[in-house]
Length: 595
Image (cartoon, rainbow, N blue to C red):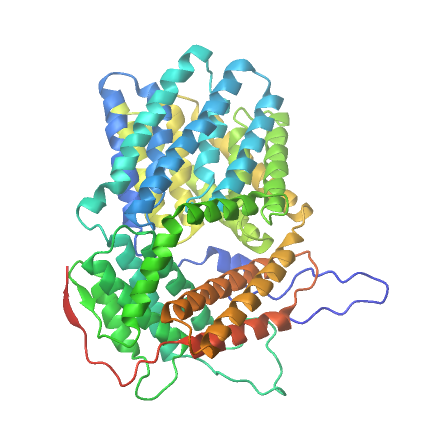
């Protein structure tokens, strides 16, 4: 993108820029287009059904279905952490359970102390903003902050007495503990499953890059592309491969003790990394078909392929062990905490998004209450669900949420008579829509919302039957109000810090590239030092691309340093190629045997 010329004396303001491939084009069409389902869609879908069915049916059996709303808060924690290795998943889901209980506790105490709608809406908006920032800072999603906001906002408007709160929180914590067990249960069957999937994605992305690496050099006289990453498909493939390889390394670093399977996975990532940093041509060129064959075997349930040995592979693995030891040491944990605090500090780029969430949720709730809506928390949740990394993605989510909720209301109207046949029928309907939501939401958010909406409406039936017309009317009105006011707040609260994050990412990339080049030029540098420098550079390039794409989707901000972005990415990938391990002649086909 080139800077937009403006009249003399007027500030340079970017309004509707050309966007990167991920968000460019016709927003309304691309926002509603269906994509391929996630390769792990069934894991959260099955987990939430199992985690919900046991407490739901238990309470139904003892004749206390009204308490299901509290166990559901804990059961929904089973949606989180499915991309994490089990060692980290145990800590992450435990944190989710505690965070869910904390938000619920604040809501229940507030509801028991005051009946003021104005106070309840203010607390709901504040909780939504805090939950948004914490989920973004810890990168716990998907599904991110929306589940937390749904639970805490709904609890604010439920009748409550102080004496009931300990029992209700105990139900949530008990269901959350069971959800924790459900989330970790697959480790008994396939303890390296998350690592295998992460490595398979890295191999597939590396194969795409090796198949179409794109031009490696550009004539200085050639016109620069209008957007970083939009120059050629090869550039996008390299960025996608860098992100996938980085994610695979992070997954392996966070896994438990080394096993033969993990050792083979580490060697596979070495080959994936070499394929994207220096796809090249000649005898040592990466073979896309071989990489895809390894990916298929790695993703499958059989043994992991053992790739052929390559120079520096042993050193590469030693470097992984050294990094893992540093991360688990006291200083490593302190560094991680400091990094988290920086993401939450006064200069955090998340602060404008938090302000958007606070203002948008408050406006939606107050406007809904002013119009006589009996459940203004639906408007709060609708507004909270809109806020994504930038304004363009927030606009897409506004379209998706509105369409999905309106269609979901029609589904609710059709299924309501069935759910009222018996309490068991109501439980079964909720479980079905819980599964359907996770099965469909990876195709597109609006499609998942078609299932989420009737489930959220059916939950109210556990406390007693409500007039169908009232429920439908309130939900439609709250959807429209929440979407309109939420996006209005996103438009009014500008995020000028997005460009500042790009500047910081550029500086970090320059430092990482200089460090990597020093290790290449130093003949005494240990192989592990070179490996660590290369992984640091890869991480900085991934962060740079993410920061650039985020800033490019903001409609109102100062112009981005696009030429510097392009130059930094190209220079970074050239340095990665210079630090890549030399493989020598093409390797033979892999053997199979790691169990």
